[in-house]
Image (cartoon, rainbow, N blue to C red):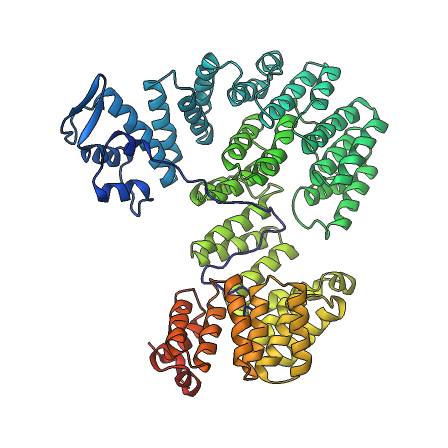
Length: 629
């Protein structure tokens, strides 16, 4: 039973920072297969991600040297390709293309950009290849190269939306409003891309003083309801600047009602109020947001509150480029991220940073997208650029710790969390450190952080959000301070009687101890009703049947739990025990072997090893399982 997620690769929750969708779009390296018949082992190497790093071009030259034939103009000619021998133009083209794809698989953004640019230079009429080259240049932060490639693409296809976005963003960043408008004339290049271009064009028109044209651009976004409200947000910002307060208020109210971009909407209103000298209204707006969102303990709302309250100087007025950057940031992440179009999300987040290099929200979102496509080294580099004074510094450090835990760099992860706790102490940072130690199973270290959280929070806050009590209860149970743990779980259930996690944990532990069995069964059954898809909770019900000797009922529930959570060492181990009790000893051994390979805790693994050696009876009789090799 998974009382709490326990893994050798702990992950800190970042729900206070960002929420990410996703999977990894794999690069395709098929062109090498299309031009030659490689050896069988070469086919395997080409089709799979390499487990070692080597020279990208060296790999491709090796691949070409494995070919028995090379395509030539005018026919197919057999020839041997020796390492270092001059390659034909076609072979060079293919080598560059495959090198770019291979570089992508290695997470080598620079290599990918370099080789795609070379391939496009060899075939400058290939629009698709040019688009790949330009996107690679953008994603490697090569402004000059991406500009040159965008110009080449527009020469091939004047309506190309992303190429126009690249040139438009660079012009707008330099304050060249007329040029921006000319580049971003309303051309239909597809929903999404054209809406980003219209947003940039609108802020360029505002920069020229043509507010009517700007509002028209914002009102004509075509990407559906999401972009309609995004346009309303831009219109509201302009109307607030113009003093059309009732019109602005109406748009902001509609935006807040649908919860489109609540933080950006609040910050935009606060900037407008501060520019009008209405400090009290600005502070009231921020306070209301904080009250509605657990105090807004970190992030831009908190930073704005501190600045307004203290009277510190801050530049409240944003340039058209900065406004365009913020207009692009949210939809680049939300729109493309929700559609799992991570490549497009990355492209427009990087363009948002071209428009405003200090836009740390875009940088934070970019790091999240890079994580989604398994480019963790680049994500860490991106987060590292968010400095200690940024309003997003806490979210950045939490994200860094998340990655570091995932790659077993636990000491570095804890150091990152301690650093942010020292510089930006809050419930968020304390809770993150406590959670880190909890998941690392260092319960003695975790306990003081949750004790402190509970002392700091008011009774009213804890009644609304009793999670600190739940987590402290878990810690106390693991420290064998059982009566104190029960008190914490009962506090949670008093105020959240439908809390499935607390019902499951307390019910399971009672069953495991053989006490309050009737009440425990009722709690676990209620938890299953509340979370019918949870393998961990179904496992609890199965294990409860097991503890009472109802092995056939246990088998049914544990097989169901294993189907829902096939990688849970605890569930698979329980299933093995049940099979053993039913006389299915070969199947029991198979399940224990599986469980041993699924990241069990050290204690679980020691017991599994005993069972694999001598069966279930050996584990029950053994008193020194920690010494088993």
